[in-house]
Image (tube, rainbow, N blue to C red):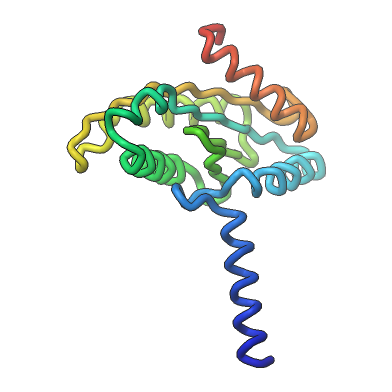
Length: 175
């Protein structure tokens, strides 16, 4: 293989990696969610185990941005992303879905264990004071919801729809 071929292959791999990960947080991006969720549904169906899917929404980012600036918001998102990733096991998948939304896939996780993880993660996000190094003292309002395969949906579409309904209820105080 010539050096030009290696260079072209290297750039192709970088473009592929860029489409998988989110620049701001370093987590997987929404483009990779579909692939991973399809794979997890397939694995769960084949081997007969459950998995949980969590959504985390940082409330009030638009209102916060004018007072702290876009760069601080990006730093906040990166810090939250790393906190979410650090809470995950090696087999879990964390995604930055955009607009202050994060998703986590917890393979081989029952509804009860997923709920426990969700509560611990939510507590760690709301207790922490963020951006103190930049001179801000930001406390987050966080909405968190969870669905479980197969109880709340057997397909990717059913799970995402169920999660969307769950988050609607969480934000409106119904759950």
